[in-house]
Image (cartoon, rainbow, N blue to C red; front, side, top):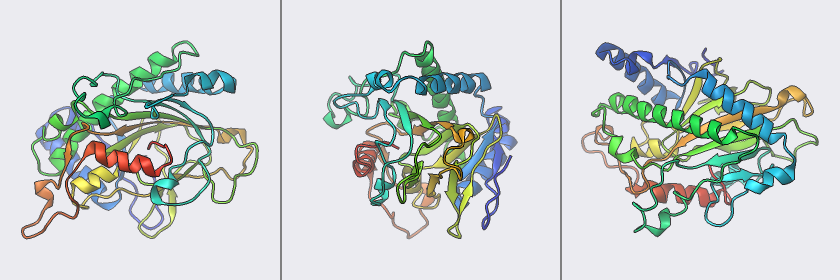
Amino acid sequence: MSTALSDTPPIPAIDLAPFLDGDPSGKRAVAEAVADACREIGFLVIAGHGIPQATIDRAVERCLVFYDLPQATKDRWHPTGAARQRGYHAFATRGLAYTLGDDTPPDLRETVFLGPIDDHRAHYAHIPEAATAYAPNTIPTEPEGLDHALVAIYRAYERLAADLMRVFAVALDLPEDYFAPLIDRHFSILSAHHYPALTEPPKPGQLRTGAHTDFGAMTILAMTDATGGLEARTRGGSWAPVRPGRGELVVNLGDMMERWTNDRWVSTLHRVSNPPDLRDAMSRRLSIGYFMHPNFDAEIRCIPSCLAPGETPRHPTISAGEHIRMKIEKSHDGAD
């Protein structure tokens, strides 16, 4: 299913199966469709991605049970110390619009965050700044099975992200394995965002998630269907809803990929709007996203195929870790 935008072409719905099946002509066709989407809107809806629906459904169901637990129980998994991108963060305690310099109230959501499952701390012991990126996880163990469900969907997203980076490489006229050595020790973040039905009116300018662009290379997102959902900013400046069908996922580019491609591909502004009826029980919403952050020391420099003869890179080279650190500092102890 595609989502129609009011003043741009529809967000493309792309079946990845021909690429993942390995057929050369299928690979090229998928890569070209992805390249078009990344240049025009930076959003796409994907099918044929290989993640079993049961993996997504189990994670959603266990998360919803967790968010119904008493506040004191949930708070047991709030992180301390350096692990600020881990564990549970209570309702309206963080805000992503801060990353754009907007002084707006916190977002109307609560979240469980996971970082990398594999432990790369020894590899990055010589880089003290990497400690937070590879901090141990704080994964809730209530209800039973939540921890296993979250790890399972993290691993599924991890595999899909590696596949998408292969698609991106071909789409950018690069060797298919171009990004592989840059993501084998990634510090990607999984977020399970819960947007409950509201019990009181929001403050002026307060949204479920304030307008922002994502920090890393790309985002993969599964979501439940509810009023007051994801919206993307169109070229004409309006907000259009993004609603994938069952079995489909949303992919959007982050600031890092825009920088990597010398601004040829776009990281699009998006938000999660408030429901029209604040107390509508059907407005309860859950999204589980995966924010692909490459290796902490990966260099984000202009990709050669994105530099025309005589053109100079628009951005200086920076490490992935430094890029994410600067973004997070703007979000008032937040994470994408």
